[in-house]
Amino acid sequence: MSKNIIEIDNVWKVYQMEEVKVEALRGLNIKIKKGEFVIIQGPSGSGKSTTFNMIGCLDIPTKGKILLDGKDISKLSESNLANIRGKKIGFIFQTFNLMPSLSALENVYMPSIFHSNTNSETIKKAKELLEKVGLSHRINHKPSELSGGERQRVAIARSLINDPEVILADEPTGNLDSKTGENIIKILNDLNKKDKKTIVMVTHEKLISARYDRVIRIKDGKVENE
Image (cartoon, rainbow, N blue to C red):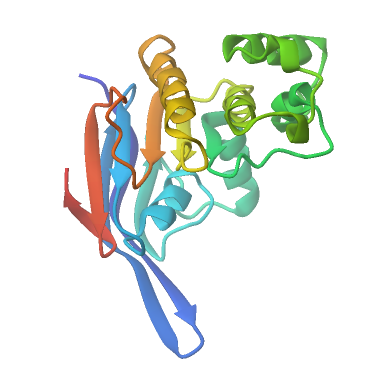
């Protein structure tokens, strides 16, 4: 049986908004096995985005534990969290988050700069990743010269540059038409089935074309059903 790569154990996240406390997560429990393709769904305000931030080491819980590959990350410093984010997790965002002044190739190998890994081998790998997502002919184009689907494929290639174990995708098809979105889902499915990446996708959409393992529904800051 595959071991759990992500464990969220009784996690609470409380934000202090002036005089008011907002409980974004209220005893959230999630376990994700290595190699799974998991969809996290829920209505607006359910806690999906906060869950994304917790899994992605972008925030720490008010209480509870978050285990990534068996290591408790819930009380680590920001510098340690940043190091884990860079090595363990690849991010794909709805708005692509590409640097407008950089080419597709430069955007893909940019995350390696933060870990002092940029060299000829890294640039070669970035070219191979762009070829993997069908963009070898667009490596010198800037985001403004690319379609929405092409920008998202650049973002997928970028998420893979440091060979992470987990790909965390936040509404990756939200800004795309249905056909382009299906192509993005196919790439994610291939990364899961062929490359054995753990995929966690946060979305409100019904994903008919996705070959996922299970759906976790969140409501009012905790798991409603899965």
